[in-house]
Length: 626
Image (cartoon, rainbow, N blue to C red; front, side, top):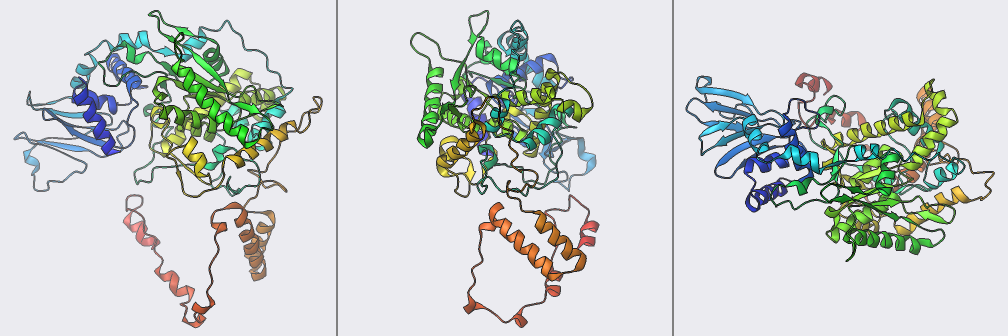
């Protein structure tokens, strides 16, 4: 990361007219979105440059020099220490630690201070002085009419949607809702335990740590592609960002659409982009994107092309792969345009046409395949990718879609499910008050936003712009053919599910929705036992029989009960975890007598409880535990 950053900073300073301080401000901006202490000029500078380049986000203290300037800046959270001294004989020292020069007496120190979050420490050798943070930043921000460019160039999706209020939302038809829910992998558990709390409280539902259900690759039930991915997290000793109390430094706002030339001089053209304030789009925002073309006064426009990501039911794995090929080609052609027509500024991958005769590609596969294809054809910076999909429902679904390149998701089936639960009285029964459909959909979006901020904070990332397309996931049990095509570069340590098996899962979901075509008797929403143990449902490591034997063993000290508990658990392990697939190799020829084996009471004396550092708890606490 440091090498990449250094290369880009050198490119910006040598191949463009930007000064070193301006380039650093552009690459590592301070938290400006909700900072009321910033001047409007500085805010406009940062907003303008967010259209030019995503922030290089994460815990970092960066020192830089070009011969004229030498300086350092801290990330927007201040998650790395940085302190500086200025001596009375005009020497400057900056380091990540205090006391690096122990022989320096305090009487020789004129200034002793720390670098604050998002601030810059700068020495100008030409003027022979330390330039204050406010002075250099105000000077850079005033070098161009950034407030005017931002005002005239950027298109706010929310404002654009409000101006389109003449088109009213059509009334929802719930006659096919159960079929849609089964087709897109919903279950009664997900509706009641995930979606219902989100739409009532505006927060994610709380659950205990640990998940003893089978991994997607080992499951005998059909699973979504999203379930094969595990979120990575920052494995460092500094504390994670608190997305609730440190909300001021976090942001979901993203400019999307065609990007300008990074190295050209700043101009209005760079910020002619669409501003998406929430990655989970409302029905109205998606309708505006699909049906309207934005036309600016200077002749610029923003229009979206719709690509159908469904394919004929029963066409088999070949039809599945042909659909993936088709949507990639269509996306490239739409963005390219033709001799008589300009290309699209955005594409929308939609599965609205899914039904009894058509199955939908999994949204994550579709988004990943199109994103990777456009990267290979060098067209990705020319357009935004939106998804209008039925299988996105929980925070992990949104996180994976955004992490693999999606600019905005409209979970229209989730909205339909929430409105149906509201009509059926389930929302009122849960909350003991009545809600309008708009209120529950807004609460659901609010909960999704908080969930995304939580997921980002685990990786030390503060802005969705930096998280988007970063692929900070590990695939567990996906074959290389899938990862290479749709999720290029993602870590996958074991092989597993290929395109054919993914098609079979889609087919089973579709059969659950349309096994009967009797319109008067739609199917019940499935309950697959993903969260709660159910007979005939998803395999779990902890089973009722196992728990009974463990309790008997604990209460009566019964060795037989414990052996039965161990046997049942080991059997379940084979169905649930990767370690359950391992077998011990026994070689009788290398056996040793038991009397040569040290007793357990002696072995445990050598166990230690040391931690990575003494920073988390005191030395006394460590020694007491030991």
